[in-house]
Amino acid sequence: MTASDRLFELLANFEVAVSQSGVARTAGGKSLLSALTHLSDGALNEADAALSEFEGDMVAAGSTLAGIIANERKDFDNCKIFLLKAIDADDPEFDILCLTGDFSRHFGFLELAIKAYDRAIEIAPHASHAHLRRGQVYSEAGDVSAAIDDLLRATLLQPNLISAQVALGDEYRSANMTDAACKCYRAALDIDPQNAAAQSGLDHTLALVLPQWHSAMLNDTNRNQAFEEAIKAVVTPGCSVLDIGTGTGLLAMMASRAGAATVTGCESVGVLAETAKTIVNQNGFKNRISILHKRSQDMTLDEDIDEPADVLVAEIVDAGLLGENVLTAIDDARRRLCKPDVTIIPAAATVYAVPIESEDLAHERMVDTASGFDISLFNALRPNMYLQTNLSKYQWQMLSDPVPVFSFDFTQNTLASREESFRLTPHTDGVAHGVAFWFDLHLSSEITLSTSPAAPPTHWHQAVYTFSEPMEIKQNEPVRLFASHDERKITLSLET
Image (cartoon, rainbow, N blue to C red; front, side, top):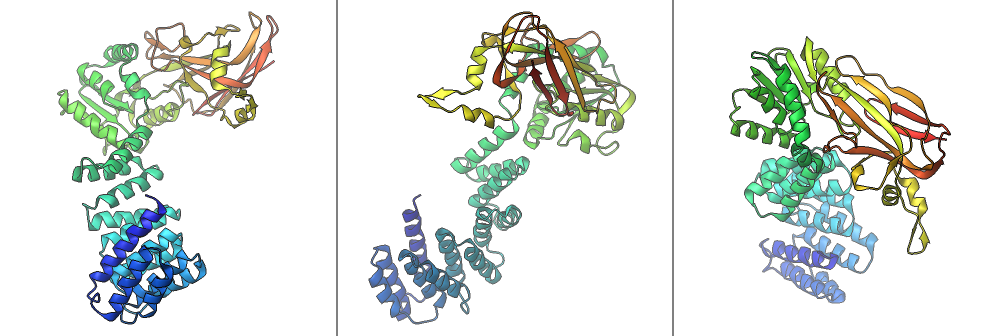
């Protein structure tokens, strides 16, 4: 909607409010309606003349209309004066105050809009639309807490107010409160299944909490088979299993099918936890698997699980191994929620790295010139983050032998940042465009799942750091690989 369309809409609403006020037949009411008609036609002088004949009890309406005329004349100072006069009028009408707030908001006077809605709410504290409008203005002003308070109040006062549910969902999503956002959008869709704004909001929120790789992970048969083999090898009748980051409940169902007496799966994403409960029930595990909408760090014995777990399953690794907080999550659960002799799946991991040459990959991730213009400075804006990459889709080669840079034993305390350096001897001349790395995930002493480019493919593929400036290296002339991790991310760089 354009600004002009919005102004005409507000003028139409203003006309309705005046008409329904009971003064439409009075001289003052007729003056207001006449001024509105001229204003809608763009006849400002005629609108002024009609308004000059106004007298009566609707002081707030007359002042608001005077403010609108002043704004149309670009006399913004007088516009504010008239709007404030309307807000401070004696015994103003509720609908007129709300519209004064709407016009103030439309003109960009957010503080005046809030004052108008404040006064309206004083008159009618339980008016959901006033709370909705004030919440929207707070949102535009950047006051997230106040916006959420007002919008939540609007939904409580009128649960079927779709615009309030959607606005509250948008605010929750902006505040990264994704579970609450999904709840609001779904409440709106329960009222109107075809509501485009609610559906769009829900789609955007789900995209935040359910990355696109989730389906690929569930369809990764190599991963699924390896985890099921490891689970079947350690689960015994009567044992208890804790599955961290259960997602859809897949690994929890594997553990229950293997004979576990009790299985608890925890999932921090609310919409996913609810879906997992339904999936578990549909597959016949309703009385054998408990799904909790919690982070494992927030779980406690007795309240969330009856006894310490015999087996801990934690498939919470990304392409760079550590990105999903696997180290701290396993360490915390191992100490607080598990038996001293707990079996942990995965038990360990080894990370390998190697400098690589790949013009295709570098060209995709770097910029130089475009349409004859030098835009290479854009490369300096790239964050130092690794990228999930399927190396098999590129022409590439290793420039040295891969080196193991980190080993993690998840059965022991691994919470310590580390820095390492390695002397590599290139086995060929080449240009290093980046460093690729991957991991071997040791589910047990017998079962290893590898993301190496030489291993059967997995949904993780490989991770790659690309260089802003490619490095020329020579055969048999050593280079130095630097590796570090801060428990959440592995960082790699290369120096000649």
